[in-house]
Image (cartoon, rainbow, N blue to C red; front, side, top):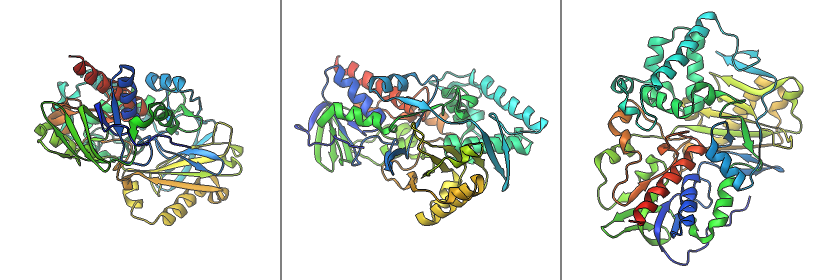
Length: 458
């Protein structure tokens, strides 16, 4: 997949400088360009796309980063249509696998067979989450009447107080690992509620048909960023990490690996964790400083294995598997739009942290052994295999998104989108709707560009 961005800019000054050529940064640049404002996008990597990353494996393109689109992700759907990037449905027909305590069972539909107690508890969990979410505005969860209470405990502590059945606890653990790439002990319960509300509920976040994993992009999700960057041309400058940022009454100056860049405003479109590594000549407001120091990234390793035949489909399996042991947490059919067979699986949360310390070949052998345990010995003999350990990526620091532990949202959440002088903030973490997803990244880029454009017009 070619990437034509990165030519030397004709000028190292512009109305607006944008840090990061992920989806949010590129969207901001597009929006500003439409308003006839000059901009430059400075990207640390040698590619665009940020946390979307598509690689060639055999004759197919596979996504090692974000890859799905679902209902209500209208901004992403509109962008895909505009850029002529078709989507196709995620395969989900057939038996699914649950590995609980090392014991495998199969089920059909969206949920495995559950005890009556588990069904009741999960029903109550869903009702509580929906009821609690109604008590706070989507853009300011810290204003909930019970915000201090919910932000004062973790999802783990809430789970232990309210869920007694092993099945319901297992369900919540897998959901948190799969959706947040974190452990229940890592997350504030208020942050959990806010994130779930931004994604239109637990069912939407965890479903394939009618949910966030409903469809994928022909040729991979990074194609969206590549096509945006091609249109922006030499406005996108690759291999230019930003080391330092200075702002004055007249503008901003960025110190980068490619020299000094100057602008009237800057949009920082990278995760808070990475934004905190920039050296600011003048101290930022304390809430912003604290937020960046207290918002770590989730932990994820993603693996894709390709095969000659979709043997799991032939045996009546959907390709989905969920496990609370071993090197993987969730697995899906990852076959391409034209049917080239593949499986994708994830080490999430604590599993990622444990297996991230192993050598890549150890991980490969363990992952293939796990796929063979799920789908039979043919799974251990792929035609191709790739992995991406996002926690080892210095320009992401983890994946899928930055998360908040207890106390962070109520004390520092208001700083997420609040400009600091001439500095504006973007990135999916700052989105109001679909936080943590590509659609949220688009929203954030549009918002930040609108903020800056309004100030340039004053």
